[in-house]
Structures are given as structure tokens and as C-alpha cells.
Image 1 (tube, rainbow, N blue to C red):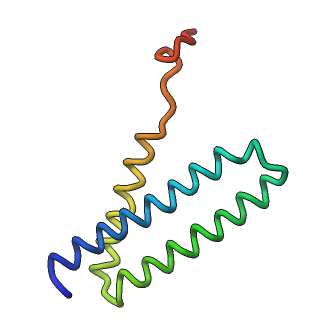
Image 2 (cartoon, rainbow, N blue to C red):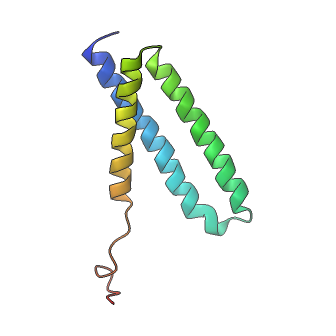
Length: 98
């Protein structure tokens, strides 16, 4: 497959990889306080998320830099969306005004 459909699929795959990577990071950070060994949890999570994400990029790009770029664009878009959705509410909105 080549052309615009391949690039669109690569971007969607990148968005999925971004949701996996940054969603996994968010879940890991939320669990750090409740674990007995936070360094082990964070390290294992990092290795797993990074390995699967790099492997996903490798398969999506299929040796074509255009697909890699589209995948990266989807990845960054997913990051922006998750960052906006998981941002803590301002202190004033929580009723803790200063």
C-alpha cells in the first residue's frame, strides 16, 4: 500500500502507539505511591513501553521515511491530546484559592 491511505494508516497507528505509551506512563505514575519498589515499577514500565513502541514504529514504517514521519505525527498528536485530558484542574477551580 502506498500514497495517502498508507500515510493515514501510519498516522493512526502512531496515534495508537502514542496512546499506549503515554497512557501507560500515566498509569505507572499513578501507581508509584502504592508500590513497594517504585524504581522497579518505573524501570520495568519504561522498558516495556519503549520496546513495544519502537517495535511498532519499525513495523509501521516498513522502510519508508514518509510512513515513519506520519507515524511520528500521530504519536505527537496523541501526546498532546492525553496531556490536555490528564492535566490537573487549576487550584481556583478546585476551591483551594490562595
